[in-house]
Length: 158
Image (cartoon, rainbow, N blue to C red; front, side, top):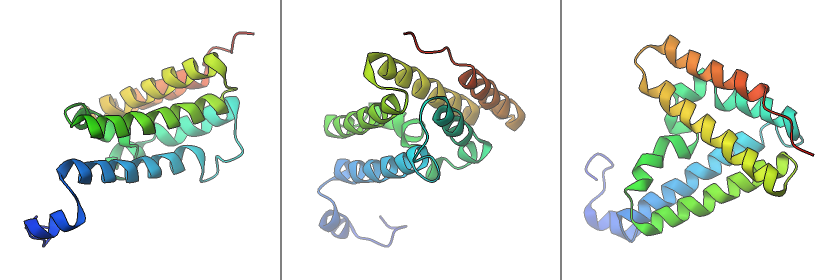
C-alpha cells in the first residue's frame, strides 16, 4: 500500500478485501487474454487457421517475456490455487468461457471441448516451463516444439 501511495483505509474504500482486489485483477487479466486469443486479427478465424494463428501469438517469445501483459492462466494459476474459493470460482467461470470459445472455434461439441482443453493446457504448460528455465534458448525451444505440435494436431474424428 505504501508503494502505491495509499493507506489501508484507501485500499478498503476501493476493495472490500484482498480477495476482491485479486478477483478484479483476475477479471481484467482474463479480459486482456480473451482479446489476444480471439480478437486483434483473429475474429474471423476458425479451425486450424485459428489454432495456428493463436499458437503463434500465445507461444511467442514476446508472450514469454511479458507475463504481466499475457494470459492470466499461466501468470496467476498457482496463486489462484491458494486463493479463497470466491477467487477460484471466478477463475473457473472465466476459464470455462475461454474453453467454450476455443471449442466453438474448433467446431463445437464434445470433441471441440476436448481439443480446446488439450490445446490450452499444453499452451499454458509450455509457457510456464519456458518462463521457468534460465536459458532463453531452451525456453524458446519449448515454445517452438509445442507450436510445431499444435500445427500438426490430429484431425477431428467424424
